[in-house]
Image (cartoon, rainbow, N blue to C red; front, side):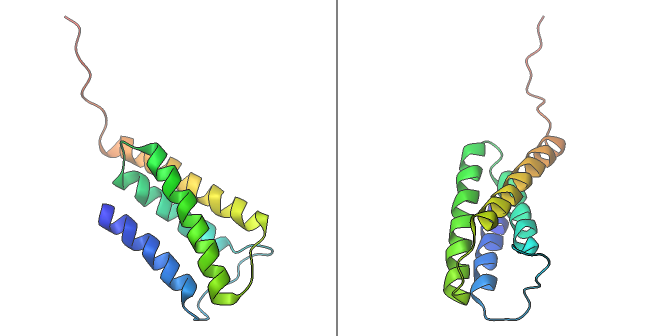
Length: 115
């Protein structure tokens, strides 16, 4: 799962750096596809690291920063503060969804019984 999460984040950066016209503009003033992609990245990171939620939050902060920098390098346009807010909220929603899925997949059955 860790390999999948890191590969997905690397692919997001690579797609941003690629000069392909496959990046659909779904809304102004920010791109909604990045929020959705970062939501998936946050979910994968939370599933990969279920015991360290602080690391997944730091990973999303770093991912949003790297994606913003790579978007600047690829297109020469600097994003607004609204872009950062939307991207961060997408990553945080992904972390929340990943936490829910993590609890559904492996519920804590390590409770001690009182006798």
